[in-house]
Amino acid sequence: MSVTVLRSNFRQRSLCRLLAVQQHLMSSQAGSDILLERSGCAGVITLNRPKALNALNLSMIRQIYPQLKKWEKDPETSIVIIKGTGGKAFCAGGDIRAVTDAGKVGDRLSQDFFREEYILNNAIGTYQKPYVALIDGITMGGGVGLSVHGRFRVATEKTVFAMPETGIGLFPDVGGGYFLPRLQGKLGLFLALTGFRIKGRDVHQAGVASHFVDSEKLPSLEKDLVQLKTPSDTDVAGVLNSYQAQSKLDDGKPFILAEHMDQINRLFEASSVEDIMQKLNEHGSPFALKQLETLKKMSPTSLKITFRQLQDGASMSLQEVLVMEYRLSQACMRGHDFYEGVRAVLIDRDQSPKWKPAVLEEVTGDLVDGCFKSLGSNDLKL
Image (cartoon, rainbow, N blue to C red; front, side):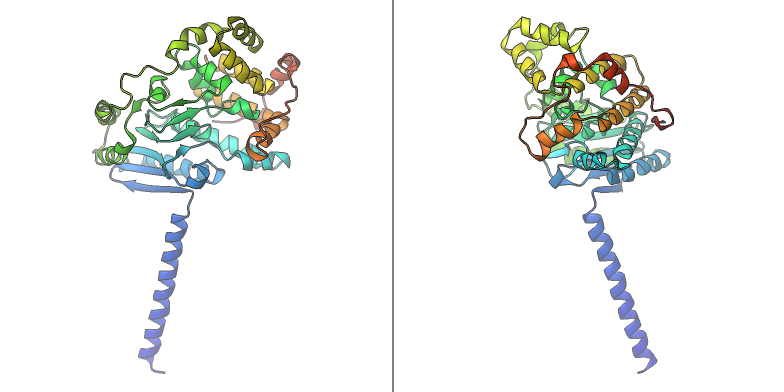
């Protein structure tokens, strides 16, 4: 065989290998849970688990965090945008099933997931460049942590916000103890204890979102943001304000809880969860009794932990809150109700959890205090 033919064969094999590698890289990128790219002046994070409603797993956290830090130092990157694929959810929460399985067998994931998630939440809350979360669709739990601490949170008519953790034996974490008590009146405590869902423009009116924009305008909004030249917060706010001004969807519609806010502020102004339940029962209005029924279904331990979490968090920094919440997360991993809640709501779906303790009166002060105790060298370090 001639040297020319050998060279030709070698080149063909090399080309085939190169194409195979390129195809592998493209397919692995296409199948990746997270897409990270530069577009104009922006670093763009796309949550890419549409079948799982973009639920956040540890692998995703471990890709987002270092990239955020890199973009923060990069002079070519002036803004970060985070969004979800699939049209149904921004991020429906953390990958609770994986954490449950790990916690049952004492696997490190039940420590690492919460630790690294909260470190990421803090990075977002202290980010030095404009951070814009496009919370289009379901935004709960871990999805709230990826968005609410950033400077700009853009809700649409598709946004569904909730912190439903007391229904699965957990608590509204990811910095819930920081942002919830800072909402108007007792709204944050009400949302934290009941898991009440708010949608669309109401998410903006509640103060969870900073802006409201029509869902169909998001591609155009993103294009305008990435085309900005070294934008300041003021520049970004200007673009978002202009898009918000164009939106007429539900414009002028009162906040869904507007007529109940006086009741919420009075009934949830209390010294204990038992006090709230008694006030709701005595008030006797259809709204109050509906909330009472909801609270009766929640984990009594979760309700008491959450009540104190928000009480303490109201005067804490975000960093102090996240350290506290890491302690609580590990208490839940050691306990009973989280595993039972996940079983009843997400696995068997019988919606009939058997909580232990089963009633509020049996959740002692010592039990609650124990959940807030320092973990010593295992405490979260920020």
